[in-house]
Length: 339
Image (cartoon, rainbow, N blue to C red; front, side):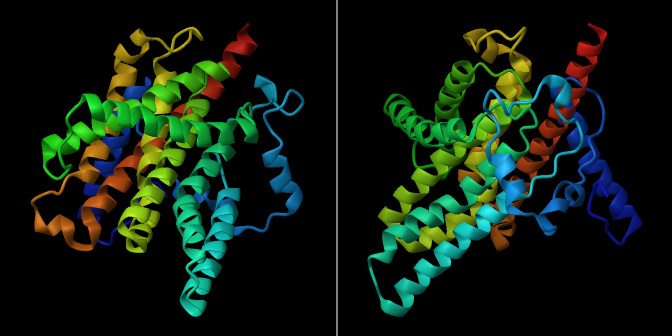
């Protein structure tokens, strides 16, 4: 099932057309003029199955000289990540115990742990998901952790530098929200490009992973900072919202950089001028700006409707890029056979 079914046939056709038009347009940006079917239940079908420790260990030992598969061994089958939900459950349980310690025993010593685990849970789990779907298995856990920690902090530093240069306002009105979206996505872009060059990777799934790790690190440290400044209420709000913010925005940017690269050349200034990059970069920037903008439409503020629409839009782009990544595998394997 590619889209959510609705009872009324007319509405179902309209929704199908809306999703089809959106995925086709995004897929054109990747180089193919077709509709992308989104099979969420199939993609996450392994989440509800039992997996043993050996299966988890096998996922975490990839990326070394002896555990990186050859191109012929890379799977082009639909990706089915599952381990990230176990990581999220572990972090969620840890947060629950710390909250219990705080509420029952009134221990202020639990607060730093709550801030750290609460900020970490969703972004880090999403980074693990992108680690799982990197079918090339050419980036190790250590490298991903390096990007998550160093990349997250470095992107915050780059953000602060850009804020000193570019006026941003308060983020409430549209011009201010656009400025913030531009500054923060550009800062993360610089760090993502650095790690793509440093690791010498050339595949869409690699770009998704590196971008997600930088964005996840950024999200964790930003949320921790805001919680320390404004209190635990901020943590509870920003923690669940992380499913559709920095991690996926940066994953989109990382994949866009790979799409714009040519002939395995390093990321350069001209890479950023190519339409394949600019379209997705502007999309990520607009998603970010839309998140910060307080839209003067009361209806969109009910049940955080504005946020949910942006989350859906961001994930549609991610699913299209995952499809492009699998298509890239089949194309490369076909070229290898011909050669």
